[in-house]
Amino acid sequence: MKPFSFVNQSGDTITNDLVKGKVYVTNYFFVTCNGICPNMNGKLKTVYEAYKGNKDLVLLSHTCQPEVDSLPQLKRYADSIGADGKQWQFLTGNKLALYQLARESYHIDDPQNNVGSINDQFLHSQFVALIDRQGRVRGIYDGLKNKEIAALKEGIDGLLKETDRASFVNNIFGNSPQ
Image 1 (tube, helix red, strand yellow):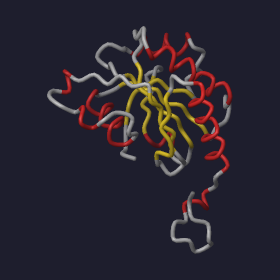
Image 2 (cartoon, rainbow, N blue to C red; image 1 turned 90 degrees about the vertical axis):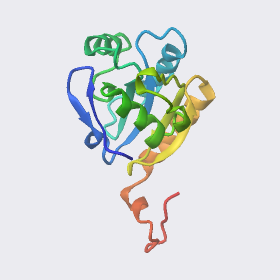
Image 3 (spheres, helix red, strand yellow; image 1 turned 45 degrees about the horizontal axis):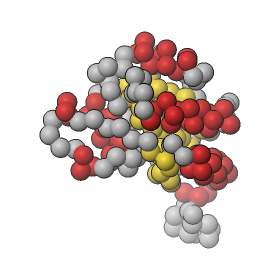
Image 4 (cartoon, rainbow, N blue to C red; image 1 turned 135 degrees about the horizontal axis):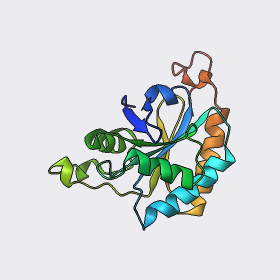
């Protein structure tokens, strides 16, 4: 996972330190979307509610329209869906950095979409990535499908049960990661 630094709906700088050693779910959306975004974030709200208060799980929703989605808009959006501002972060920042993270770290957009000027690009994806405690993508799910959201929750449950011993990849103790 590449390091990142963005600003959340409260104006706080959020870096990869926030998710270090935690399980997290990430997606991309934009506030004024009338298509897939409200449906996807509505389904992610069920994930948020299922794990609300679990300090080992974080949700990161990145804007794909940072030139439009201002901090006050992100704050209103987060408040409108009942996100607490700690466990579910709505992030904005440099468009190129946002898109590179989606393509190169989360793998929820095709890197071949990186053509021409970043100002002319638009990332609009219903895919949600599940990241483990070591910063590895462990699953990509269609955020519009109930079955996929159920599978995401199962994946979260499994990752929350994993312990740090899963990071011993040299198999000294016979417990290689799954």
